[in-house]
Structures are given as C-alpha cells and as structure tokens.
Picture (spheres, helix red, strand yellow):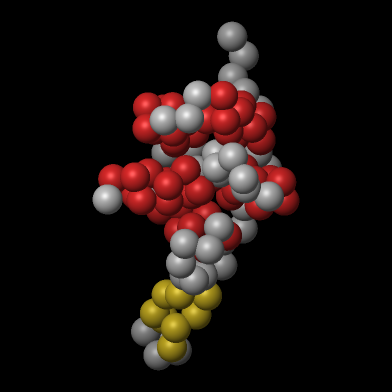
Length: 114
C-alpha cells in the first residue's frame, strides 16, 4: 500500500525515472521549482532505487515549492498533468456551474545563491 502512494508522489513531484521530458518541464513550471532539481532527484532515484531514495527525492522537491496561497492549486494541477486525476473544477455559485481552475504556471525558480 505504501509503495503505491510513494509511486504516485514520485510522479506528482516530477521525479519519476520514466517521466517524459515535456511533462517534467511542465511540472517544474507548475510547482515553481527549477527543472535541474527534478532532473537531479530523478537521477538519484535511478542510481539508488528504494523507498528511502524515492521518499528523499519527493521531500527535496516539495521543500523547493513556494509556500503561498496557490500551493494546493499547484499540486492539484500537477496531479492532472501526470494523469493522477482529471483537471480540477470549482463551483461558482453566481453562475451555478463548475468551471475549470484557471491556474497558470509561473517561470521556474532559479536555485538559491550559496
């Protein structure tokens, strides 16, 4: 059971080894994480497969995701990009209908200066 959840998280974070490059680029933009972070973490999983390396890769990516009001929307949109669930809809009471969540990804962040 835990392996299935971890497999989903690896996809959601964009660090799955077999993820298409265009999907990884889209996830980096959605999550606001530098593409290099996703590539390095995916390489780490490929070199040392196991629960610990996969979990560490997910944590490393999520630590880079900005903590703002849109973090939930970012994760929901990322899940839709990798096919974990359909695109999100929100209820608009004035229109009395469901509408797609209009989330636009910003540019990927550069790594911090150290």
